[in-house]
Length: 82
Image (cartoon, rainbow, N blue to C red; front, side, top):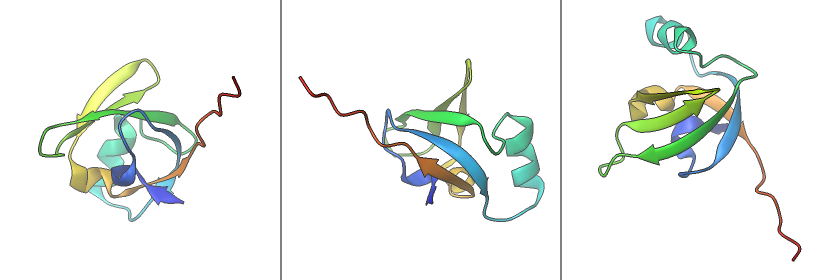
């Protein structure tokens, strides 16, 4: 288990939960960040805040502090056997 703010650009993960409940968590869920959803961290701003995410066919930006509340399970990168 890891946190969304620890992902690298281009890395994908599946949301498994949140650090705590509250208004911020509820708002993130309204934006589509729900448990079981696959997400990809597209890129980070030059000062690493905010981060751009791909959630389904949508792209959104959230602050790094908000990303730290999202628990994810990272996917292992595919191994190229060529």
